[in-house]
Length: 280
Length: 317
Image (cartoon, rainbow over all chains, first blue to last red; front, top):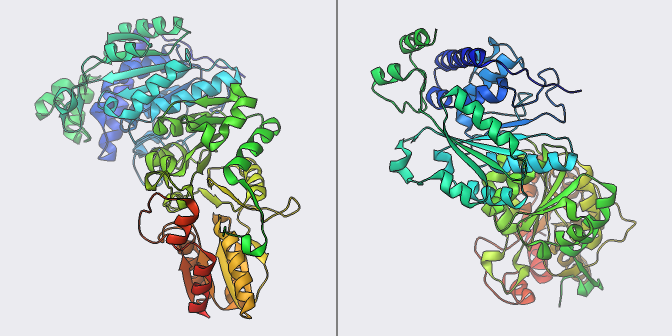
């Protein structure tokens, strides 16, 4: 059994991005908690992967062995993943409105035991790339051609385990592994450059022997081009440093709220209404 | 005098050596078994498997956090990863990775901690996993085993590969007394009674099983008939064997090469208190980090001896 998501046209993809953003805002506001701004920065990347023809998957058969794997290492941004999976047909957009509610499989961070199609349980930062290495090695042993995509937060790059993983992935020349660093410039308590300035991710990751690109990660065309370029590299692991804005798509609303970081809190119903109007 | 010598037991393979040999052999029978190593494969003996199956062995360097999560990823693609390191480095260095990448999603990963206990000797307390069982037992859904000799370690290695789900297997460094023969049975969660007795029960695991057998031999000279149970699986615990021991012998001593808290003693006492409270006493490392020294000297100094078990028995009888 095989399935390949149909690649949307650029125009359709951009519309889909708005749909994902609206869902993220609706579900987090309904939940009364969550990380909408961290989710919104990663929309173009997640959107391109799921609907731009870069991942093969089958919502009817989520355990299909040769499927590509998507790992959201920055697990707190899970609303963007739930939104994409709902749009892909794993479940309905109504279902995700139970986000974070008791009994719902749409937990505050991804839980693979409760939701088929989630490829890794995350929420403790730093582990996603290592899990991705395991899956990439497993795909190689299984000879099924599966690719692995891991989205990592820029604050998360402060975790030492990520650098252990960067070295190991290069050792095994994992050409089926792509890491996307969602560099939105903020972490829980403030700007990443103030908390722990890591300098150039591209320089550091390239020094490990990875194929690297730094892009404007909120430009849908650019994201698609970068993923196309990465797909052509098959002899070593690939990293895309995706420079984004936290809360992209509703920045005027966050500015009005007086907090452009807006970490770990939902929009009030009033702000959500304004945000949805912006995205309509 | 080594543990088991008094009872005429012979020193055999170290449990880590038995594990390495078993894993290599089982590699043929279980084609999805892979090893993930943090550059101590020549100590944990996963190297024996790696040499026989180089395409299925991954050494990710001295990076236990990455090592454990890589194993979690491999398991999610249908493989059976065996991830081994010194018990101290595996359980203590990579605990959050074990929690999040293996235990929480229920990954089919076999975690093997070698060089556990103070019997590793001269390398000293930084290398001694003496809290590992406590850490492993606190993780929901993880099977925890401590084997006593080479034969039971080989059987445990096979049993853990056949079992679906996360397992922690604790092994030691030096050669240990031979307790079992190939015809003895081994089942996860089912304790083995290695000496029958009616007056008191000594529940032990790891190399303290040999110590318990010696203690039973000494007690017999005083007319005390001691039952010895090898509780090789701490989780799930064989509460039937414990209930029977409490009922039939009326007193229990627990002996283990682990800290006082959170190991076999804690597990057994929780069971006993809920089933059939009887007097209990404990032989263990206590509440301290140990020190460097020769293995036998350390066992003597920290009270992991047959005499210490005999003394404990006399407290409860």
